[in-house]
Length: 353
Ligand SMILES: [Zn+2]
Image 1 (tube, rainbow, N blue to C red):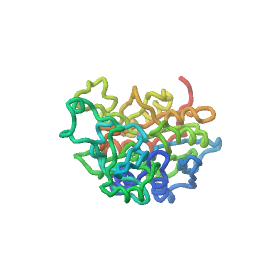
Image 2: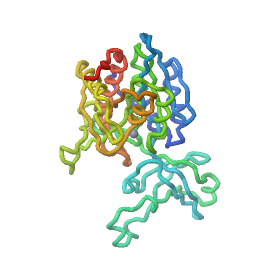
Image 3: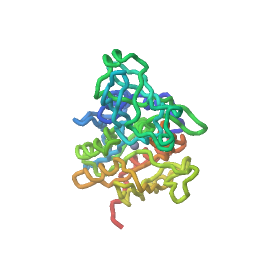
């Protein structure tokens, strides 16, 4: 059982860039960590990192796939103007009002820190003051002369966010905890695991933030019998939202997913995960997410015969904003539930009742 978060490892994982389609740096960092923990690993053509731990009691060749996406929301430079300002397109879903004066890293010939610029309030018309700035009104300011910017940056270069990871009370706060906190949880699961009965595929997927693209390919390739996705979910236990819309609550444990907009989870998997949590006294809650999908959908549908799929979700406040927040106890519960679930998966009840 995991009792303490490895803050330094998590910090490294959230700080390593990897916007959709450009996950090589984070993938290499994960490989360093998982190399001694698995029997084999490989990268497929789209870039998913697939690790394999052989089952010790598996005459029928059953496969369990557990996945967390390693991409993070970011941007791609689309234009460098004559003054050296950068224009960009988003890679993943941004709320434009949250990026004002945010620090970013432009991955040009070298990494360059920049800031998301827009007009200050002093220079806005009354009409502009009353509306939200649109994403395409922002520009990135590198604080360098235009000639130098043009030398170092070109269209197609990627941009990630720059924020320190820190503890605020009992919560972890930083950028890209969606879904790097679950990347961390998946690595911790591999560290905690001893033997598994069925072959275990721990997969770090790519391009989730632009539509579950990596998970589709990974599930097609692995062809699992069981699938468990790990991702963050909405914790609407904040002012201004009524209790029936809370989805999940911080500090109440790992959330067993029942539904999201891409998946109706297999009721046998829901029951299995819930029972395992209860029997092992692991804090848990349920999650019904009306809007928003996860890799669960890709895993459930892209296995040849479909997979018995579900997900363990981590409650999060301020998703896809400047900094995101999760409760450290929920992270521990997620790791412990996942580890216990894959260790006992040979006790899964396949019967349709
Ligand atoms: Zn995510």
